[in-house]
Image 1 (tube, rainbow, N blue to C red):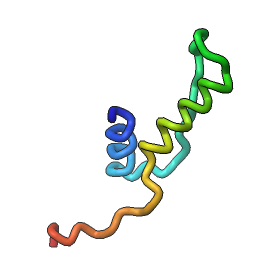
Image 2 (image 1 turned 135 degrees about the vertical axis):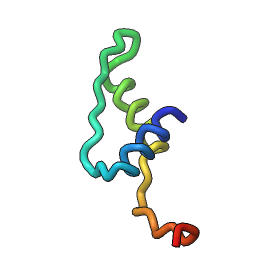
Image 3 (image 1 turned 180 degrees about the horizontal axis):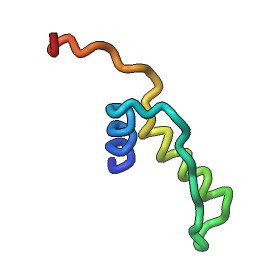
Image 4 (image 1 turned 180 degrees about the vertical axis):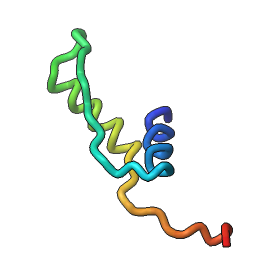
Length: 57
């Protein structure tokens, strides 16, 4: 997904900060927009730290 690529790139360049959610969709409620955004980020964000690249030695 697009967001998984964004998060992967951020990790590759060493970013370890916050990801913010901005909801400006007038077609959904704030709560639904937040729940959907959280779902997208849950699928995009890695929960473990990367290990060493064994093939790069």
